[in-house]
Length: 59
Image (cartoon, rainbow, N blue to C red):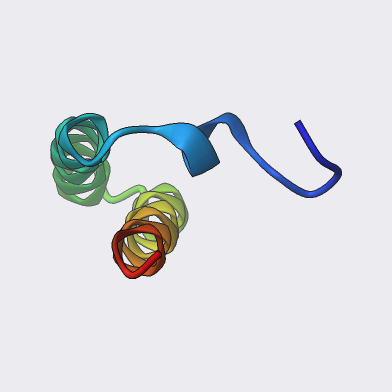
């Protein structure tokens, strides 16, 4: 793995979708528990994975 790359850089689209769904559930649970900073971290990770997934589809 090159410097700056993550394991998620190499996930197939189906696995990215599954991971995003898990993160969404965790984000909602954190928000329900008033853990807004934690929910925001999940939100940011979802955005990052979605963006990488879109970029990888274009290659």
